[in-house]
Image (tube, rainbow, N blue to C red):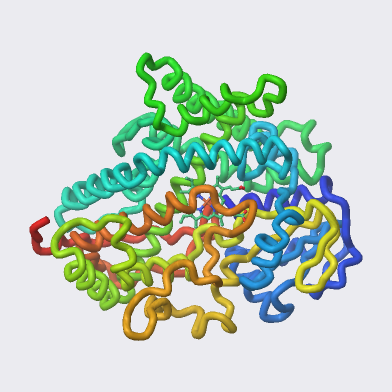
Length: 489
Ligand code: HEM
């Protein structure tokens, strides 16, 4: 998703954002009209941008047509822009097709930094917090237990677990949002996933991004654009159906996010009703998209890394057995499980599932690392690059969870300043607390009850390079989940 957004923005910049060619930043030579667009046509953009940082440093510019983008490659410069100067860089670039998929900019992830956006983010944030406080732990525990049951059902056969991880993560969000939990075979769930994935994939295609670059093309027939519009209509029908189902219930569960959001709309002062139903609708889309593929992709990465380093898996298992003495973990146990926490941090470091975050836009003239950054410049926080910075992470490309362990035990925890998989500042990932609890509980339950093994039929370990599409995902692989000896909870 993130990479597709980038591609869309990159194209849209020709039209929508003023040029800022006077930047004195270093960067590759750019060519007339196309700028550095060829540089950006790379099958793994995060790796490519990280390699460019070796040549041009922690902050460099890339030109797209007449517009300059600034790529930030270390945690220091990323924090300067996103956290220290958050109010200068909290905007999002605006594009024709972005507006179409975001209900006219009415969602959180693509909406620009306006008064309405701030009100929407505040409302969603407080609804999410309220609902999480009441039920998040129970909801994740329930899905984790269900996941264990599903794995048990595979009876040691080699399987690709990615769909099961997607259903588990998606069920956490749909339970929080609507109080609905789906079965893997549910047609509504499949329709929803297919439609959301399709929108993100189509939106990233050059057939669509060309419409941002060349408005005249909007007048010509474009079957890919027609499909995108159809999928957006389909998505909106599903979300409307889910919201209407909730509204029509006699006994509404006020604890779900939808209830809280609708209540928030009602509670607005009559004089300045900033938010309407569309904001609730689009925030729901945000939560479903943001909350499903990210955590699921992370679980896929975690299992793959453990297949590469089985001894890490054994250390985590031993820790779980010793500390928990047979029971299932609670989130509050995390401080007593440093080995597991170090595994979580290291996987987030090596494969931040949103490797380039979401592009930001300078909403006023500012500066980063002493360089002048004019209003409207697009900022790309290269989280992948920051997590592979050799100045901060010795041997940055190696999987070494132990780097997060203090000497003599104990975890440095994911609060380590330079680990920034969720971004920061005004645009910090809205689902950070949901995601952190999911990663912890899902992996703890999984590794307590199963030993994950490479199937005997497989001759090679999973490919760890990844596919840079919606999120940074791993190529499909199979694993055997062998039940651990029964313990007594
Ligand atoms: C935005 C990472 C899970 C909802 C983001 C951003 C990152 C990110 C890097 C962009 C921040 C920026 O623009 O600077 C992750 C990771 C996850 C995860 C690594 C899991 C491992 C979730 C979950 C949800 C969620 C579970 C929903 C419950 C969102 C939303 C935004 C966002 C709504 C847009 C925020 C805004 O523009 O203000 N996420 N995310 N994410 N994420 Fe997540």
